[in-house]
Image (tube, rainbow, N blue to C red):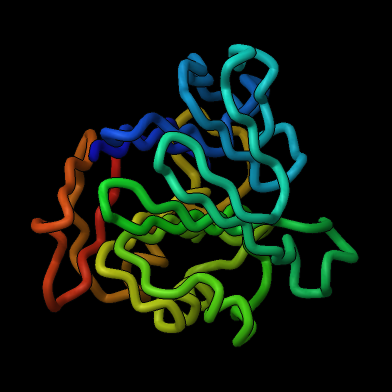
Length: 211
């Protein structure tokens, strides 16, 4: 499996079973949107910096709500959550997605705004190999809350997202405070290539992709 990051919360997962694009954004945020060529497109919530699916081809399976889904052997579960810490009263709902392909389980938290996950959410998420988590604060959880959520889930690999990078016009923080709070030295890559047998066996890894 190969994982690419386009900035903000937008990732492409390329597995043997097919390709998934998560949270494609509008060019209005200052970054170049990816061309949508994927079998599956996931939208965590209906904000313009996460739901730009207008250019998806008619064959693409677009998922934008909680529930259980399957396409070409890829299992996807959408779990309800909140974009803020007041049960959605400020920014509405958010969907957490758990995906399984090539026997690897990945979790994308979208714009999670809850300070911590509920017991029901932790149980629904289950065992995770790769966790994509927002860390930039302001509109989502920030560094301290992100570290708390990571401890709740216990993934093998952490991939931060939704933080300030050059060109991005959304007012959020850089990843520096998060990296310091987590206390791990990041491995910086253009793309992450993983197999089930190459996942970390003991210590958690922090991977930061270049957009």
